[in-house]
Length: 324
Ligand SMILES: NC(=O)c1ccc[n+]([C@@H]2O[C@H](COP(=O)([O-])OP(=O)(O)OC[C@H]3O[C@@H](n4cnc5c(N)ncnc54)[C@H](OP(=O)(O)O)[C@@H]3O)[C@@H](O)[C@H]2O)c1
Image (cartoon, rainbow, N blue to C red; front, side, top):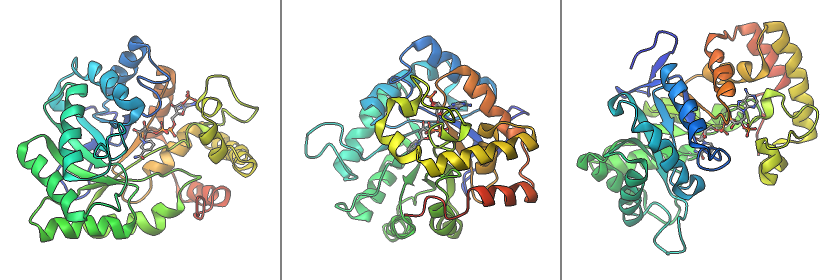
């Protein structure tokens, strides 16, 4: 795939190129967005705009996101797509249907491939670290899937610097393929861990980074300035509402509007452009429940974060945002 309006970035020191903006299916496709025509129109528009990277997980609506997105992928040229899915969270009560054991990884990939309707996934993520499985067991299982051609690259998600290093070291010691990409959270309200921990680790290891929730589940678009729009994500999820919709965040998001107005873009576009401008980022995984949101967010590619804008952003959302 090549589209002159899209940027393509190498996934760290690997030879794989990802569209700088990508699209994920968490809480949306097969979940809040069940209508197949809507899913199709969003994914096909993303593809036509040059998006090649699509992110899913087995746990997203317990396999329904993989099915909903896979239905659309079948109508697109498979070789042009970079499809990722993930393993870790329990999919049933079975004691072995969880974690990063060799057994769970081997059995999960088969189910994911079937649901997506593909022979391989381009990237297979360990969705979270598993303290109960030795790093070498996971690294060797992932590496064996690569040798079988069911997975092309493997990665980690929400791993600490020490866990990323442990995964990489275990792979090297066991002559296995190392993880090539980390998937951390990164947004203006959740940035501290990325700057202080994730980015230095991935730079040292030559890994790529694909980041999640650039709008903090929609908060940074300003849609919650005057209350909770019915049907929106923070209206639907009490957990997400409690973690994002704090009085402090609301005040900062209002101040952010003044800056976005001065730059001549929307807050959603500025927030996504800021993620794109962060050191080490290979791709920013966006989310959209409506085609208009996707179209709007893709415009972030045209926004330049000048040093002056970056400084103003740091004043509103300091680098400590998200520090626990
Ligand atoms: N590895 C992990 O642990 C992990 C965790 C979370 C996510 N992810 C990945 O990252 C992807 C993106 O995360 P995300 O969906 O949380 O991204 P996000 O950009 O923070 O939130 C997207 C949501 O915000 C709303 N929205 C998007 N654009 C908007 C706009 N222009 N104006 C107003 N509202 C807008 C929509 O929700 P509503 O319309 O429903 O309000 C949309 O579904 C996920 O799909 C998943 O692939 C990974």
